[in-house]
Amino acid sequence: MEREDIVAAVVDAAGGKLIGRVRLQKVVYLMDQLGLNSGFSYEYHHYGPYSRDLDLATADADALSIVKETFHHRESDGGRYSMFELQKKPNDDKAFGGLGRSEATRLARLFADTNVTVLELAATVDWLWRQEKCLNWKAEVAQRKPMKVGNGRLDRAVKLLEGLGMTPPQAARA
Figure 1 (cartoon, helix red, strand yellow):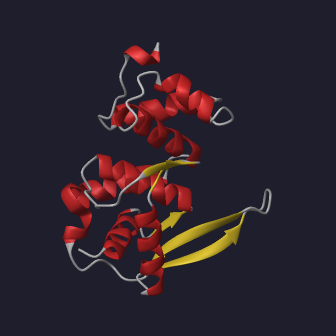
Figure 2 (cartoon, rainbow, N blue to C red; figure 1 turned 90 degrees about the horizontal axis):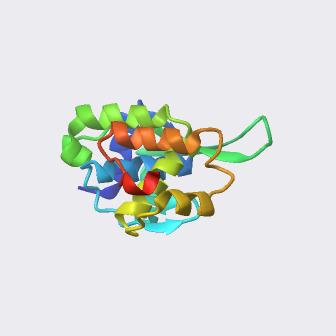
Figure 3 (tube, one colour; figure 1 turned 60 degrees about the vertical axis):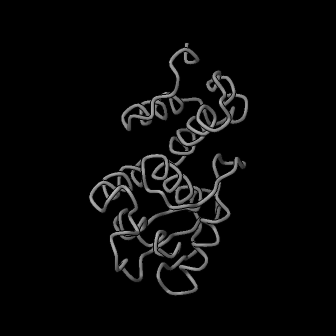
């Protein structure tokens, strides 16, 4: 399976459109943890788990006219963001990996509808306890992302993970 086909499958599963590079990274990361099996490798970056492989596959998907990336600006502050739109549906359900089309669609649409900061926090919490083996993930995420954890966002991120069966260790939450 070509990696750009995986990008197309995720955008297709999200309803044919996905807004934001950070969102795309977190959607694929979380779907990988749930069985997508994309083969992308991840490292920790400013916004949590990040895959250069996914970034390159996304650029390839755009160059091959499979997924089109366009740039837009927020009205509130003029900040630039990307919009990914499906141009060519995946030919093969293998692009949905171990999730299958139905589960990939359920997950991608859930993540597409989730506040991007909550999604970023959920992926970061998962990364911290699963990859970095950080048992005190709550304190660590608060230290790394102090401006993002407030207003109930961290609690919503943890609830999202719990609803997916990806509950972080309870002992560290108290």
